[in-house]
Image (tube, rainbow, N blue to C red; front, side, top):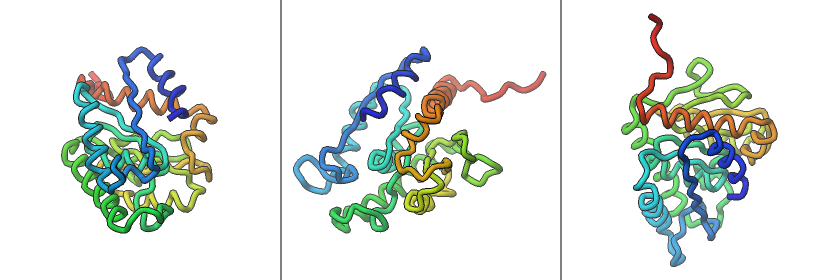
Length: 216
C-alpha cells in the first residue's frame, strides 16, 4: 500500500475530487481466504468492495502483483481497472499453498469479472498500436481494463497472455524485467501521468465528454 501513497497524493493534487481506499489481504492468499481461515475470500472481499464503493459515482481499481489479481477478480465492480503484473492463473504460478479448488475459483472469477465488465461497458475499452492489445514502451495503452507487465519478465508475460485479446482488456508491455511495474514506472516518471490519464477518462465517462470534438 505504501507505494501508492505518493502517486495517489500527486493525482489528488491535480484538483479532482478523489478518495483513496486501500484493501489489504493479511493472509497473502491472493484475496482468496476469508478472516475465518476458509477459502471464501472472493465473497468476503467482494462484499467489502461493494460496501465501501457504494457512495461513489465511479471507481478506478488498481493493484500490483497480488493486488492486481484481486483487481481482475473484481473488475466488474469498477469502471476502470489498472492491474500491474497480475497472477491470473495460480495453477501456473507460485501460490502452491493455495488449494486447487481455490486456484480454479480464482481463474473462474477473473473470467466472469472480465466478461461482466465487457458487457456492462460495451462501448469502452480498446487496444493500442493498431489493435494488437499492446502498447509500446511509453505506457500509453488505454483500456477499461489495462494489464501492465514488463516485456522482459517471462512469468508476467505468460500470465498476461491468458487475458490478452479479451473484450475491454488491453495488455501494456513496458521495457523492464521487473515484476514491480509501478516502481519501474515511477522511476521513469510515468506512473503519476498514467494515474492522471485514467482519472481523466473516468471523469470524461461520468460527464460524457467526447475524447475529441468533431471538426466544424
